[in-house]
Image 1 (tube, rainbow, N blue to C red):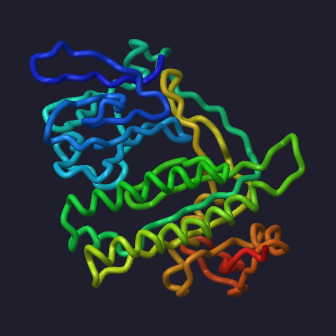
Image 2 (cartoon, rainbow, N blue to C red):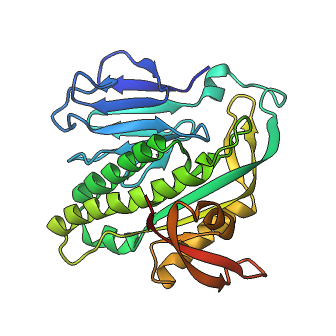
Length: 307
């Protein structure tokens, strides 16, 4: 059974709604959960499901904030069973699907292990100097811009055929799996296009930031790597968690981290660079040492599309 939200509003009887892929919360009557409270914005927050099956709560820049277990939301928050969400006078409880199904025994909750190795491109994008930004900006403005950023990032990744695996604080990880039934380079071309589009999107958000915080730049770093990656479910029968794991994922994170020190925005691993060289302009930065890797790997900076 799907995850649900249990809604409590004052003296009104509690009710439940299914979360699904996306659920909107706000004062607007068009919202999935409509909260008629002047402290609630028309488009206040949204709950979205991403590739791992996890539901994330995003505040959309509400004036009075969205709170999970008493803490204000600024970056996407992965919801867990029993989490309490406060929006104005409404209290919403997240009920995970395993809870709904009434898991009562060890056999019901046994771990699902279903791994397979696939050729995958991993993309990791991180907001530069997020801690400094969060310290200097008012909570309302921060949630407005950061909430808007992650919402548009999710839309952009989807437009380019990728799957968001997870949000980790101010960082997002997405992946593209090589099709087994067709010999094409979508798993190469689409993530490279998405990376360039993310930088363009960051420039737009940079203009918005300068209006509120003239001394602060909004920049991102992106790492991409293609390789054999373990894909599979790590979870329970009631709540499977489909995700990408392994060395390719680690390298993508390391490349993103290395980008700032290299003075670049998008760093790309060798296989992806080789496959995309005919379509994209890349700068060979030579072999680099990455944290946790014994051997150096050839690293490239993505410049632009040749087309």
